Length: 301
Ligand code: NAP
Image 1: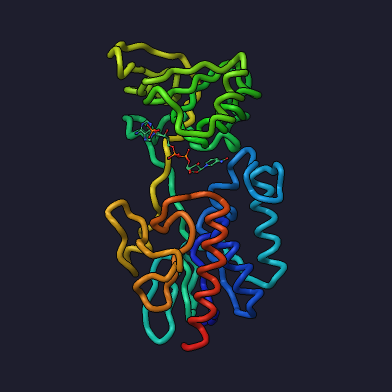
Image 2: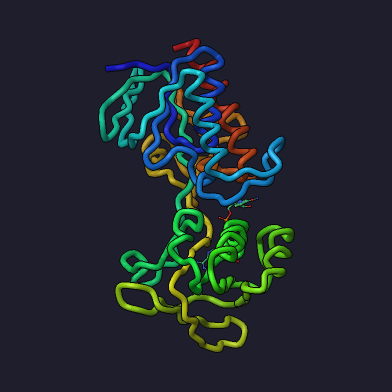
């Protein structure tokens, strides 16, 4: 079985940064990612708050992180970690094979929260990624549900492609950055349904509209759309972590800023860790901290 000093589960900014730091410290590194390198940032239309880069697409930033980790000699594989067996060395079982390692970094990130409406899984017309699916709705009417930065950025991106974009938010004030709200307010083809929730998805196999309810007035209405982009936040992706180390009531790994978990040789980095600020910069910071802690751990194994 192939052995690595450090195995990293998760190929988002936290995992890729950990790979960069661990390779620069001279450790052998295997990074395993189950879906796509770059994590959720890869589907962000534009990143404008990463220091030193005025504006970059999420996909380009993800590519740059990947290239940097690979150029430094990290091995990067698209494999899902299914199980980790503890022992003098940890055995990491994936859907393609098995590896051993001295230290493991969990950088498994978050997954999309859904609205939990009937038909959501099966119907075409429901998307969680404006960058990936926006072009299918060129010239059509769509809605974005959510009030955070993802929803606001998705709406801005879709406003360039679609005939009409309706932003549906359950409260009267947005959670996302005012700069994005102002940019949306200037778009002629963007309208807002505030204090509003989606109560049903209309249509058969394909979405044709939404039933809405105003939470203040109680008024029910419907909105004809061919696409609904759900951007209602994320939940931690910690199914694997829960097998190794305790997770808190919300599913996050409760380790401190040192990224050290109670399980020997297991470290946590990025959005899957319990913390106050989940940003690209803090994910990268975690990646560096976890990698250096893991490198230090390897000296004594
Ligand atoms: P978020 O900030 O958690 O926002 C989720 C939004 O969905 C909130 O407005 C929330 O409403 C709403 N929501 C949650 N559950 C809902 C439900 N069941 N029904 C209807 N609405 C629901 O998530 P996010 O926008 O994905 O952002 C995640 C993190 O990434 C944030 O820290 C964000 O700042 C960051 N991010 C940053 C950028 C950037 O460019 N700076 C871009 C994207 C994301 P309430 O407001 O009422 O809770």
